[in-house]
Image 1: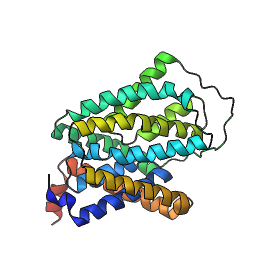
Image 2: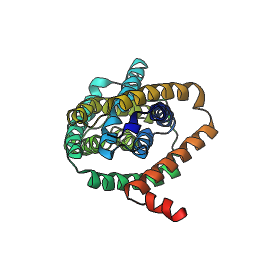
Image 3: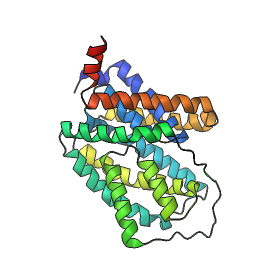
Image 4: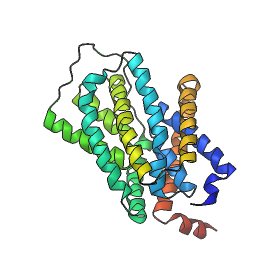
Length: 267
C-alpha cells in the first residue's frame, strides 16, 4: 500500500472528504460517490476504496435510523419486509465485487459513475412532504418486491454509489408512502445491510481502517453541520453539486485511463 495514503495531508483529506460527504448526503444524496472518487484520486485501489467507504455509510445511516425512529417516522417491524431481501442481496453483491479483479472493477465502477453524472447535474426537483397518514398500509406483492429489493441490495453491496435514490423511489412507490417516511425506511435498509457488507470487506482485507475511521468521523461532523447551518443555503447546494460533479468526472477519466493522457496532452 502506498505510504502517502497515511501522510498528514491524506489524513486531513479523509476528514474533509467525510465532512463534505456528510453535507452532500444530508442536502441531496450522492455522498458515497464523492468519498469513493476522492479515495481513488488519492491513489487507493478501487476495491479497497469501495470497502473503506462503507464504515462512514454505516455510521451515518445508523444515526439517521435512530433519529427517524425517535421522531415516530419509522416503523421498524413493518419495514423488515424490505430490509431482509435487501440484506441478502447486499451480502451476495459484496462477495461478488470483492472477487472481481482490479481492472474489471475500474471499468464497472467507471461506467456506473458515468451513468450517475446526468442525474447529479439535473438534480432532484421533487419536493418532500413531511406528512403521512398514520393508517397507511403499504401494498406488498411478495414475489415482485422481494426480487426488486434483492436486486437493489445486490447493487448496494456491490458499489453503494447512487443506491439512496433507488431505494427511495422503490419504497415510496411500492409502499405508497410519503418521501419522508420512505427516507426513514431507506436509512434502515442501508444501515441493516451495510454492517454485514462491511464485515465481508474486512474479511477480504479491503478496508484501510485509518481512512475508514477518519471518513466516518468527518461524515458525522458534516451531517451535523448541514442540519444546523447549510440546509437552507442555495449557494452551498450549488457549490456541493458542482464539486461532486468535478470529482466524479476526474475519477471517471482516471478509471478509464484517460486522465494521464489528458494531462500529458495539455502540458
